[in-house]
Image (cartoon, rainbow, N blue to C red; front, side, top):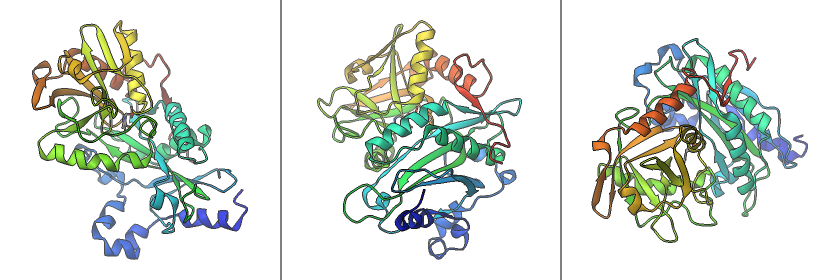
Length: 384
Ligand SMILES: Cc1ncc(COP(=O)(O)O)c(C=O)c1O
């Protein structure tokens, strides 16, 4: 474990340097970076004003992996900046994957995390696609639980949000030629969050269909939560927001005809008793919320179809919604395609969307029985 000089050096280089954000030269030069990287005590957080921005918490988890592919046990450390070689693979070649998960406080003051085994499995698949040594699933789940436990005070009060967890696996070892990094760092940091879209949860969102740019192509990395998938959507998303839309819907790269997904969430449409969502064919993210909704909808007697869903069909749907850890279940108020605007449910939340939202959030927040065993309870002293 960490036996070669190179392997020994790399984890040290990637080590968190708590306080660097407070006192480091870089943070002194870049005032804004300094402000966002400083955690404040949970008692000073205004839970009604958190939104979906970064509110740093007191602790994060860090583990490292050497050239031989052996992962350290990892530890909980104070939240802080990382120190990286300018030649780190993640900075030069984008070798990294991440996850997004949520923990909730119940009315009995228990802490629950939703389907961490699914995130561990998706992270493993993604890391193999990106030629990185997978984080053992046990280590992944323990890391998530320890991070929640060490930041228990930052899990918002019932009904005021959740603790968003960001597991991140990056190539931190230095390398010049294109190739996998010689060493890796796995981190889990977190932030209390509330609604993703402006206006609060269940405020219908207005989507525009993108016809020029594609998010992913057959044979690409669209089904992976790799870091490089996200910057390319910003240009399109910023322009859509400038025009007053909430987000962008992408079409397939081959025919420009079938729905793929939205920038950071999956898509569903409802027609009668049928709920349809684009099939997993390698170019969309296999969302854990998507998977949960498919199971919940089928159990309620809906016909659930995972297939090619054309934009024409969607424009004629009864209702549409988006799903994701961050967005939860977001009703779609309208979709604009080729200058034509389809309005759903008079711009309000449709009954199927509402039912899916209620059931999902009810399970996640421990308000209704978790019959499928999706929640994992986090002991508050788990990190000790
Ligand atoms: C591109 C993309 N699609 C879909 C999702 C939804 O996935 P999940 O439900 O696992 O959060 C996400 C969010 O993580 C995403 O980034």
